[in-house]
Structures are given as C-alpha cells and as structure tokens.
Image (cartoon, rainbow, N blue to C red; front, top):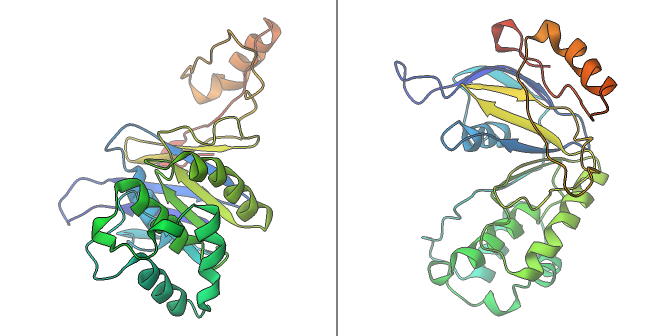
Amino acid sequence: MRLANLSFRYARRAPWVLHGVDLDLPPGTVAEVTGRNGAGKSTLLRLLAGTTPPTRGRVTGRPPVVGYAPEIFPVEQPFTVIAYLSRMAAVRGLTPTSIDPWVDRLGMAALLDVPLRDLSKGSAHKVGLAQALLAPPGLLILDEPFSGLDAQARAELPGIVEEVAAAGGIVVVSDHQNGLTGRPALARLHVGDGTVIRMDHDVLTSAAPGTAVIEILVDAGDAEAVTRKLQADGYQAVIRGVRTEGNEAR
C-alpha cells in the first residue's frame, strides 16, 4: 500500500493538515502513529482507511477489506449491540455466526441486548473493534484502541494485531495507552508539521532497565557520522527517519 504526495485540508484556503506525504506500507506491517495532539494523526488514519478522501495525491494498493475502529464509536444509532453487529455482518456478506468469536474474545456477551446509546465508552469501543474485525481485514486501522477497555479486551488486542499481521495484513494504530510497547519490529510513523516521517522498526526494545532513549535531530548529511560516533562510544544508536526536500521521508 502506498501514499503518494498525499495532502489534506478542510477547505480551499484552510491550512494544510497533512501535506506531501509519501509512504510505503508493505504487507505484514504493524505501525504506530505518533505526534502531538492536533498534528493530524486521526486525519492520517481516516485517509488510510478511505473514509476521508485526500485533497491532493492518492492512495494505491489499499487492500479490499478494511477494518476501521474510530476513537469515538458513533453510539447514536437505533440498534442494540447484536442488531448492529448483525447488520454489519450482512453488509460484508457474512453470516451472523461471524460475530461469535469476537463476542467471546472481547467479552461482549453481557452487552448484546444493550442499546448502543446506553453503552459506556469502553463498551462502545469493543463494538467498534468487533465490527472492524468481522471480516479478516487486509488493512486494520485502530484509533486509540486500548482506551477504556477492560483487562480481558486489553490482553486480547495485541494478539489480534499479531494475527492480522501474520496473515499479511497491514495494521496502523494511534495509541496513547502504549498497548503495543515492546512489540518487536513495531514501525513508527511520526506526524508533525503537516508531514509524516516513516520511522524504521524499533530495535531498542531490548534496552536494559535503568536506560533511557534520547532523540537527537541532526542534518541529514550528518546522520550516519553521528550514528557511527555514538555506536563507537558504546551507545545503541539507529537512524529512524530522514526528512528530505519536498517533505519526502525515507
């Protein structure tokens, strides 16, 4: 899946929320979107999912089955949980039994007859996750998926992410709860100043207790020399992203 020169703003003369984003997401990628509040993380997720069209640029290679769980599930709908999930299953051409595994894994049995409008935030989030997973997604977009979840669902979710990635799916997550911290090969997508910088896989997850990670911003031409010097001094050091002219990141 590729984003080419992707840009978005809400109105013709409005400032760019994202501008000139170039990004490759190969099958099996699990990526965490980071950045300050208001930097455009949720906008990037919606562009990836296809729920928001870009102002400029394009997305190619998006898998045909996309599962998207927004940060705030729209509960103002005239359904119970079971009626809503049954309808979503039908929309995807699935049988009602496709709901059953997610009812068990996310601990939703007691919620099935509850109207959506009466759900707590955490319970509504479970429904959002379940509808995103009903059909095996080739692309799974999760906006703050751990927020408000109980212990059972929190414990289950990392395994679900692994299953999607192992099947060749792409998973992109925005997560302030650090629910995937420590996962090997977790890619980082840092959103800032209207651009996205693709981070390399996290190779510092084995850092010993009592250590700290310090981020240093240097000129692109000096990155390799600085990294080599730090490594020669006995530090773990990696180049995690290079921003080039035209806002292209590699």
